[in-house]
Image 1 (cartoon, rainbow, N blue to C red):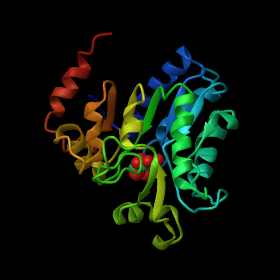
Image 2 (cartoon, rainbow, N blue to C red; image 1 turned 90 degrees about the horizontal axis):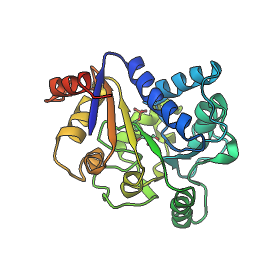
Image 3 (cartoon, protein in one colour; image 1 turned 60 degrees about the vertical axis):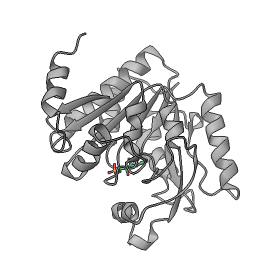
Length: 256
Ligand code: F6R
C-alpha cells in the first residue's frame, strides 16, 4: 500500500479529490465506487469546489455505492440512496441514471446483491473505489471475520457500528440491524482503491489494516492484497503507524 500522511483532515480530502479529478480527466466515463459516512465528506467537498470552478465534470461518470441499509424506505434521509443523492449526485452533477445503490428494500436480497455485482461487471468494473474505515476495521460494511472472497451480500451490522452510526439517527435503535454491502472480494476487484481516514478514533484501525497481519478480524487488512491501494490519513489517524517516518520519507521522494 502507498501510505500518505498529510497534516490535516482538509488535506486528506484535497489529495484524494486530486487523484479522482485526474482519473476523470483521463476517463470521463470512469466508474467510481462511492463511500458514504463522514470520511469522504472532505473529498466530495473538494470535488464540488472543482465542479463549481468549471475544471471538472461528472456528467459522464458512473457510480456504484458501497453499501445500503436493509429495510429503510428509499426516501428516508439516512438511506444511503438519499445520502448519495444529496452528497454526491446533486452537488457533483452526476446523471442520476448513472449511479446505483444496492437495493436494501428488495424482497429477494440475495438476488439484489447478485444483480449488483453483475451490474458492476457490466459497467466494466470499478476504476477507483473510495473507502472509509470503521473503528473496528470494517471497509464497506464487511464486519470483522468477513471472508476476503466475499461478494455483495447481506451482513449483520456489528453493535459497535450501529452505535457509531447512531449519530445520523434520532435514536440508536433506529439504526438498521442489516445492510447490503459490496464484499471484500468485490472491493479487491476495483482497479484502484483510495482509503481516507481522519482523527485519532481511526488510528488503531489504520495501524491494524496497514501494518498488522492479514486477518479477517481486520477486514481493512485485505487491502494489503490489492495491487494499487492508497491510504491517505491525517496526522491523528496516522498516530498508531510504526513506520510513519518511512511513509513520509517515501512520499517526499516519490518519483514523478
Ligand atoms: C460507508 C461505509 C463504511 C464507512 C465507515 C466509516 O459507505 O461503507 O465503511 O466508511 O463506517 O464511517 P465514517 O466515515 O462515518 O467514520
